[in-house]
Length: 340
Image 1 (cartoon, rainbow, N blue to C red):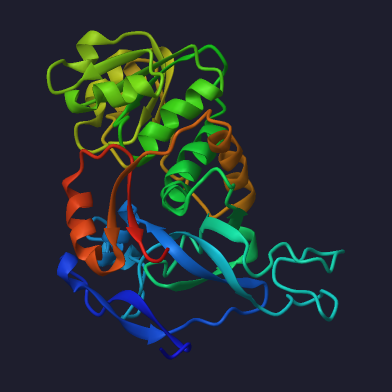
Image 2 (cartoon, helix red, strand yellow):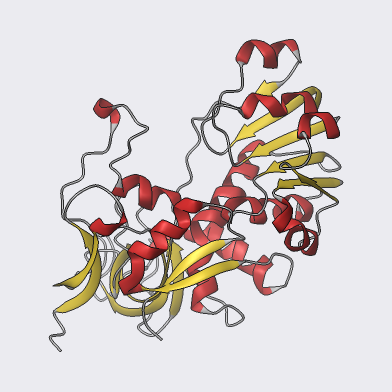
């Protein structure tokens, strides 16, 4: 097999999952400060299918203008295959990942790594090899396999970075809407680890056992109970669902409570103000962060946070994985298996 090429899933047009095609393409070459990763598993995230559909919910004039064909995917887990040359300003002989003031490389060939790479932007993770800036990667602990390593980065960093931005006070009561999903199931655990007194999970009834196993204090089945009627005096609503009906959950919060939308939603500003609620502006965006991911890894390796893998698909079946992802109602994340 030609070592200058690799298998990858590319799209030559925007559209339905069928536009995702497995084919041989040139293998990427790492540039200064970059690492070439032999990908063992790749995570599937909502931005992947937003990209595939050409961001239909964003006004045309604001959409990213990405040239086709392109390889989707930003979450990868694998091993270091090669190091790019030293970044400008580092001594001769330094390698990718070296930091200013030190010629020692952060990474070596063979290291197990994972990360949310090149995000926001084109990650190109649905492939046998991917290039990433050295700082976007974290060392994959021995306690984690590559499927877990690929499932964690975007969802985990979304919850971790947003909660760091919110700085919720210890002892609060938090309500997580969409608690069984990729971001939600990690948020309930990080809220608990961060000192929340009570964590209330909202999801459909099929997820109750799963969420109670993650340590939630109360479960509300939104298909059987109106959450706004059953829950009161919440300090923080961490809403991973959003949408046109997002405002229905506002009565569950106490006066002075905060609404943290992960996705865009209609929170009726006038109603929120009348109820004395603060709605976070949706200007926050998750970003690649190897150091932050390493902090999450420590929690997972110690057993304080569990990463749920809802399903695994071969790389060649990326289209089927997208179809399943868009159906929703997952417990955790979907992952593409690329190589052992």
